[in-house]
Length: 637
Image (cartoon, rainbow, N blue to C red; front, top):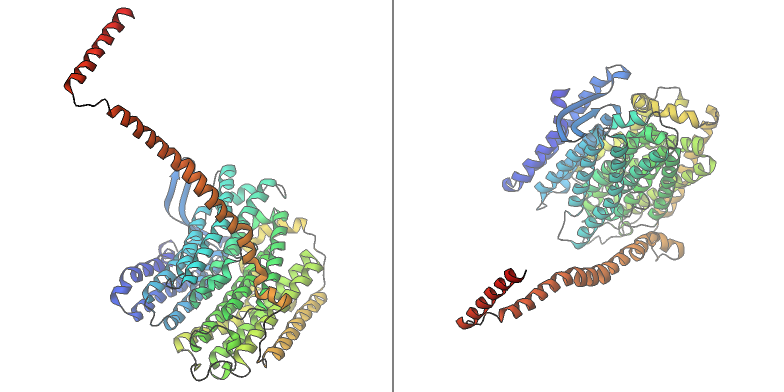
């Protein structure tokens, strides 16, 4: 494994270099697309082989650390470039490379004719390289390298169409908001190194294993890591960047802002599962933030009309679901939903790109309608994705979301369960509002100028594959009440076994019969179905749209959160920067001190310059006076 596993991150890096350095010179879209896609597909095949290889080992042996070279050595700090290959990292690698490959193929059709075609694939490959470093790293600093790398690629790809001002603004917003979260990540790393003398994750987990529950230091570290997670995974209060990030090309939204980068925070918390099992207080904070984010984002999505903005707020909401699972210390369930969400959300983002492509760049769903007959493949696959995210059995989203609902009831109580159930109902409602307004009813676009058409096969084939995964992907994690093995839980058991044991020591969940659990399953199915029917019945025939009023207007304007942040944070910083730091501190104090010293010596030199008269007699007088003073000094002193 040591000899070939390094190819998984190296091949995307090579793809980045080839497309970045040679792509524009060769001026061949076909070459750039094949190089970019192959650089991700081969790592996927290697990951599948490693998965098979790891599956054949005993459960306790399914963890290999591959060390390639010493990265940083100074004093007691020794950081190696090492990968940990275990069930959790391998799941992430398969998602990143598998879904990433399909999105690369789709991009060949979507970005056709774009002047930055080769550069786009170079950036995608660089992102894959950074993301793979993040999920494979065996130490926090290497994770942080990948963490910052995906942030950089997000910035580059959101602002890819840099000639448009709003894309640049969206890229800067994403970059700056993520820096806030990254600061929390750095503080957590500092605390880990200062107190435990290592940044190696395994050594750190070994050092904290014997600590008491809710140790103050561990709570601080756990919450600071979570601050980093709220930035990357778009949770309250740092979620405002993700909807604006939809300004980038749609494949970017599918790869980075739905399936992979935004799940980095989920992965970080799951990788540090022992830390969070030892800090129930931090876990409760994660639970509350997750519930609030899921609910607020779902309500905002109800009144959005931009097809990508709806999916963006849906992504924020679904990430909230994953954090809810993490908050209940159900780590395997969170990762399970991460996987199924990657399938159906990548599918829907790519489906939205197909719609936008067919509608000549139109993104407003109130200006669509009747597209199901014009774009049959896109419609069918998008419909499957919508059913999956709504939690309709036997599609993948049903199994993962149902597990989250049950774990919420079991570990957080009935009130939390009710809120999450309502959020799930809202998910089904806004998703079928999107379906109804986009694909049903009469056309609401100018049929003389817009002629919707199905996308080429290079775009529809990835949609079909993702639709199959969205439909069948849930069967890897069948619930225990069916009496069948849960393959996904069994696969991840070596990673979370010790954390689960600690959690069970203080979480005394009530014993519930399978019959009660089945009742809750039926309730969730009924709620989702009713929500879908009400939404579809209303919006599939809607033709007129009035301006929103009251609470609807508040939702349409996203609770005015951007305006609140602008008023409460951005404007005060701008005013303080301009009125004090610039005009007073910079101009008067810093520049004043520098300029004042220069002025003083300038005036002093003007006075001394008067001595230089150019008259020899004056100079002789000064010289004689100096000699007299020196002689007088030696005589009297």
